[in-house]
Amino acid sequence: MLVVHHLNNSRSQRVLWLLEELELPYKIVRYQRDAETNLAPPDLEAVHPLGKSPLLGDGDRVIIESGAIIDYVLRRHGGGRLLPKAGSDEHEQYLQWLHYAEGSAMLPLMLRMYTSRLPDQGAALQPRINDELERHLGYIDAALEGVEWLVGNSFSGADIQLSFVAEIAPLLHTLEPYPNLAAFRDRIHARPAYKRALEQGGEYAFGPAS
Image (spheres, helix red, strand yellow):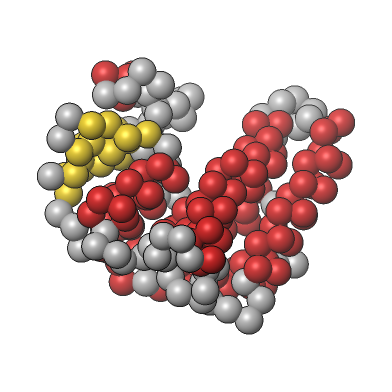
């Protein structure tokens, strides 16, 4: 059985969502952030040296990184669901979005989060961070013009991977200039499997407002 090492308020929520979409059996091992530092507990280092979540166990194998986990689950357990056919143009687009989410889109969001904790909020860096946020959020918003989902207008693992960007962007910047991205987030939150994953995962500060 697949085992999700799940940290509250983290990217591992989207792994639970993926497994709920596929209706696969899985077990959750829960970890709680430190109330003062917000860091993951050291227990996660016993599973993988980096001590980061998500981690997915499958037998003796442990997979790290959200994109790699999504790709692994879909290839090995998805039965062709949520994954374009290998070699197709859609598959190439899917791979780009899968890697883009964490490789590019998350960087300015993380910079905004970390600099906000500095005494001056990293004032010297904010113009560049704003430029990058507008560039990347605008890029995703334009890709969603006239469609509901990113790859061939069909729901895929790429949408699950991009969901975290859509969820934390309004907390660190704004989605007001990006109506397509805001609507994308709302569609995500309306999916039954997403709601089931919230019930399974527990505390999640970035989901739909209660």
